[in-house]
Amino acid sequence: MRSLDEHPNISSAVRYHEAVARLAAPEVLERFLHPDMVHTQLPNPLFPRGVDRDLAATLAASAQARTLLAGQQYEVINAVASGDQVALEVKWSGTLAVPFGDLPAGHVMRAHIAAFLDFRDGKIIAQRNYDCYEPLA
Image (cartoon, rainbow, N blue to C red; front, side):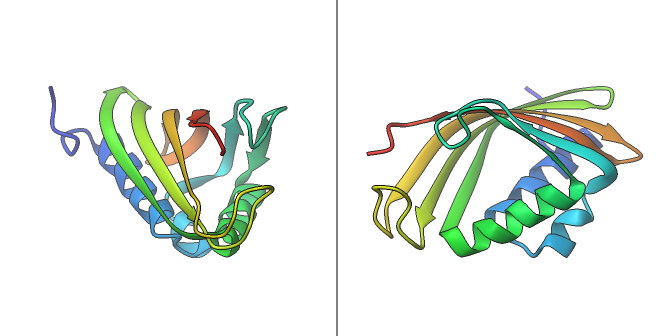
């Protein structure tokens, strides 16, 4: 298996996820994102109808996450690149800073994620997430 750092787009995808994990400010995240980017989250328990976000909405969602989460982790399990496309297998956990639905502050949510990223000019122009959440209880 190739090192996660061998392909420049894999390296960028991993560094982007590290920035997201540390709840970096939107202007930090924007450095990784193409101005025409679209982030798609396929239907899951948090977004039952799924959601498509442009750059501005993606950055706004990241700012909102900073108010909802006390912290989060992304563990990249596997990464594959072909040309300008990267596929990541990721384990995510996030600790709630505030209650969310029936979940109390301090609850740790977990998900297994497949993320597919398309790059243009060295930046992420499309991201599709397939988030498989562990039971939210």
